[in-house]
Image (cartoon, rainbow, N blue to C red):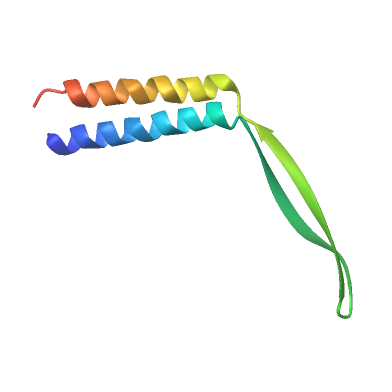
Length: 78
């Protein structure tokens, strides 16, 4: 049973960290470079940036679920 307790605590810790990360960085941006045209050795490229916003309730939900999993791991019967 020690193994399942450890898995619950580790999973909960990961969720808590992800929840805190969402609160610290709610918006992130990715970039994608694509080829527009190619003529011989000449290559024209464009870079597109996309921003993604993560709603606060997702971070809060991960944080709460992580705390619940950590508590369940510590209070599990041995």
